[in-house]
Image (cartoon, rainbow, N blue to C red; front, top):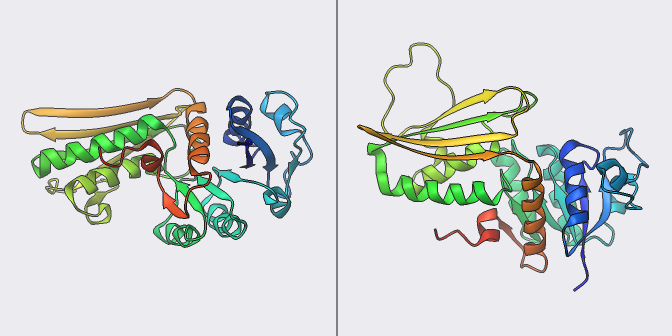
Length: 271
């Protein structure tokens, strides 16, 4: 089978450049187009040279329609508004869409799910294999321990991150809620300040830290009477997110239309 022709969104950004580089290193993938917003100063530059992986002969463009023409897939770590609009455009052309964008609202996800009726879409708050395995473990532990153990999700990211809690923290919180057979919205406690009173049994708490250049650290704490269990993941290299996204793209190629997760890609839904 020919290499999968991929469009990289936000190709001049930090994650976009990492994706371009990873495409050049991943068998079965080829850089088809590199997209930036129409006012970007990077327009016209060679995407490979900008990513530090050698000349690709793919100039960065601001024309989405041209970029999608002849593409097999698009990899998208951008913003909620861009990802939602792109889902519809990619679906019109039958182009696989891999979404690593965080900060998506339930309304955003509903629109993306609608687009997934026409094409395969893989969406995850974190494309790391390790994080998604962690989420499966969190779901199982939460189901096993029940409400006799309090659940707290702790996360830390770099100072420039704009959404909180992180998409990964929410993914882990949703896994914990699913293990208990409840919706996260029913039990989520995102902030505590002042005289809050005692912790309510069954709540799933979140604590957010921001600072420095931390790529991503997450811990899910199960605190019981006289004992505590902590499940932890630490990301040391952004390349792991790019590798996960490309794995998702290759997995989704030729797949039936649908809204998929990294758990589907990794085959760990039943863990």
